[in-house]
Length: 544
Image (cartoon, rainbow, N blue to C red; front, side, top):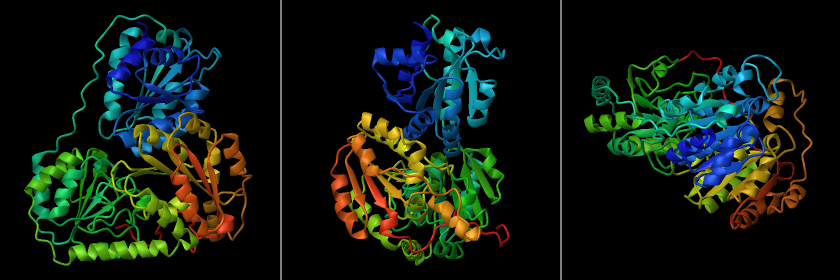
């Protein structure tokens, strides 16, 4: 077989079910093989960035390896912004990209589609990046790349394959991927952690995305008396209607006050990122302990008294088997009270959009996937207030980049066929990759797209009002008539112009099987009760 087909066979052996990309003369040998073999569904995105975002969300929801293909040069460059998002989220993703003919590589001859230092560019936005320089390297490089992507801390890995090598014949080889074993925690730090935690009477567990596979172990600790709070990436590890979870209300004033009553905090699989700790100034419980597969997490603005390096699931299971707690009798009631206060504080900011939240929750029920772009609505309520119930049921742009929601919704829908995907986006963010609406329609993805339309960058306006004396500039956008746009695509469409219309519009939209667009005309519905002007950061307090 030729190298292009060998790549297709290798992906099949990795159990890849869906791949995403943009076809080009520099990846056609691979895509022709995928097409002929028929084992992998290939989704032709409208942009390389869109393809990476789709593969990213597909991996997050499907707990699998995401796969995306791009061409070389400008196309590989187009993929880089989305690669930064996958890197920020720690998504296991294999990015296969073409390259010019190998005799002309790195010579600066002006070869068509050449990007000088492309491999360096990919290394900057990937966990690691490789070039296949001969057909004899194919299996070794691909196996190593896949293993690196899937080894915690997981992340995207790029492999570039020159077009002449893709077309070369090669001898059959071993297509079996390398095994990926979780990092086994050492006994001694886990034993020390269990001994210290056994003294706690009001222990709290902070869960991040690195603990999404540790649900059973988390429940054992909760049964022993632990309360839970999560990062946005750790949502749903414990269902968000459980009485012992604070959800992702991690920086709520009510929850920060509650932290002061706790006597231990165990952080599992979370980076304690700046935007979820008030710029590393959130007053967290002490003593603080950490479990993480990444040794770099031991060196953090929040120092850990005990650091356990290893897989979160294994470490938490070991801890649960060694731990015996005598928790204060009123602790569980206090957790619920703090959650109720945090939700009340969040609802007070919504104004007319409280009805939107309630109707989405009612109609979506418990079995849905909640995908969000960066928008005022997500920061105000999407990241925390709308409840989700599974560790793979929430997807958002973790790196803070705008315009990735629709593509992520498509990847999520193809990772979980038969489940409804609800996607929240703003008009400004949707415009960044509006062409991917055609991809969603072409693939018949079951996506309910809610577009919050304020005809511009709402959060930028709010920041300008709060920090720049109300001098607004460059934030107003020419926005399409979404009804006409939907009509051009023959896409079911509903427009909401007042709060009383949320119920009927959403009921009709949820009844649609396949893509549907709901526009919320925010200029007609009205403003939020409290303007959101960027992530909260505490600047006047010492680091704690």
